[in-house]
Image (cartoon, rainbow, N blue to C red):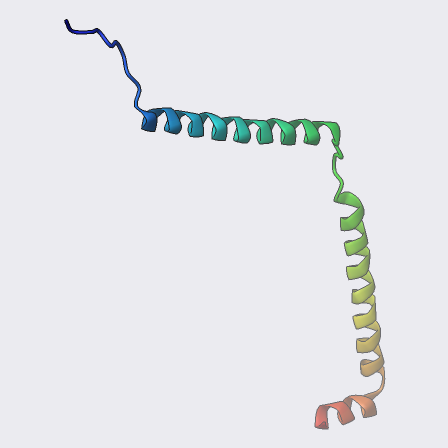
Length: 85
């Protein structure tokens, strides 16, 4: 009298399968949420404003350097004093 037990799944395989399914759902949900959030907030080229501000800052800094250099170049006594110091 042997019983046919059929296909048996061990408890380890059940736990492993549950953990893999749960982690797949979590990662898939996170990816979908991020994709939907980015699609709704389509900002486009949002760094253009900041880049223009940076370029204007660099331009102003260049003008400051030129004004100092021209002041030094126009006064030979000042240039000699700075060179000695």
